[in-house]
Amino acid sequence: MQQMYDVLIIGSGPGGVGAAIESKVLGLEKILVIEKGDNHSQTIRKFYKDNKRVDKDYQGQEVEIKGNVQFLDGTKESTLDYFDQLIDNEEIDVVFNSEVEKVEKQEGYFLVTTAKATYKAQNVIIAIGKMGKPNKPSYKIPPSIRQKVNFNLERCTHGEKILVVGGGDSASEYAVYLAKENTVTLNYRKKEFTRLNSINAKEIADANGEERLRLRMGRNILSLENESGAVKVNYDDGYSVVYDRIIYAIGGTTPVEFLKKCGVALDEGKQPIIDENFETNNKGMYIVGDLAVDSGGSIAIALNHAFHAITHILGKK
Ligand SMILES: Cc1cc2nc3c(=O)[nH]c(=O)nc-3n(C[C@H](O)[C@H](O)[C@H](O)COP(=O)(O)OP(=O)(O)OC[C@H]3O[C@@H](n4cnc5c(N)ncnc54)[C@H](O)[C@@H]3O)c2cc1C
Image 1 (cartoon, rainbow, N blue to C red):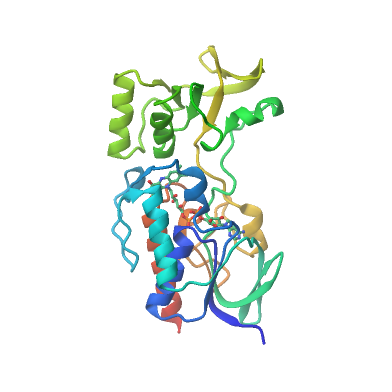
Image 2: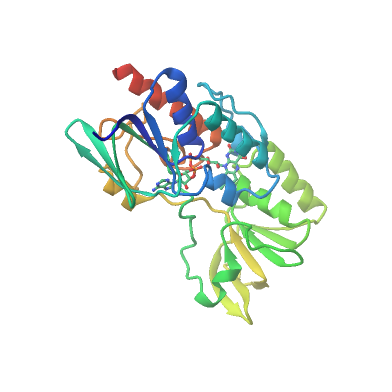
């Protein structure tokens, strides 16, 4: 007979790892985590620069941890080490390199399907975040310059003229970091930064004051063109500037098709509908982490969602 899991968790970022730890600590025995990548926390691995400062109160949001995972300020590396330890200490079973394709409700349980296997579970936690598909601009990216139009720092080297686009903490951190070895402009469509935490607000103000980077505020980009292999950016103030590289740090997209394949009802803005316990219309199926918020998720927020959802599952027993 196929194993019936108490909870099957899809995704092993902070929300998924948090849900697994809370399950173990609070007394759910049969749990399984399924992760698309070859290791946990793919968003942290792919989008955080090396040695990045990781703030618990990200984007200026002060969060009190409610559950059993005591998350503190640290770095990319210390955060990944911490999640490694949590997974090891609680002996969490994670199936890596497995992407969940759909979840179907059967009589009294869920059937979870990956390309390699199917699994049965009483409850499902969807914790897949939004960074599987980073947000792209609405204007066209000419295919011939796609290598120069990036959504993280993987392709960056040094000595380049770089435009970073975005107004959140990730954009500001990318800009300050890249400005150490490159000529950097940070472009934000609004005239002021409103979402930066105090450390990043100060770092941006200092870098701007000392002319270590240039701010281009209150300006929208209208289009991109290829100019001799470089990226020509046409702004709405009539000016055009050529950069070696452009990096968008403008968040991620809700995986609408995936949610539809799980039978999750969406609102008019294509956001999943969840109640105060993070439960969807499909009773027993929960959404936690970045996917449960319109914008402005964080590691601590994802951990709190996970604690709340698992507590709710236990309350039903
Ligand atoms: C550049 C940047 C800097 C940031 N800095 C901070 C910070 O300093 N402090 C802070 O608190 N927050 C920070 N954040 C936000 C934080 O990373 C997110 O809020 C957090 O990672 C959300 O956790 P999550 O579990 O919801 O999703 P994610 O961390 O995105 O994890 C989702 C996981 O699900 C997996 N997955 C996706 N689809 C499937 C599938 N179909 N099947 C199986 N697995 C799947 C992914 O591979 C991934 O491992 C930052 C974000 C970015 C982009």
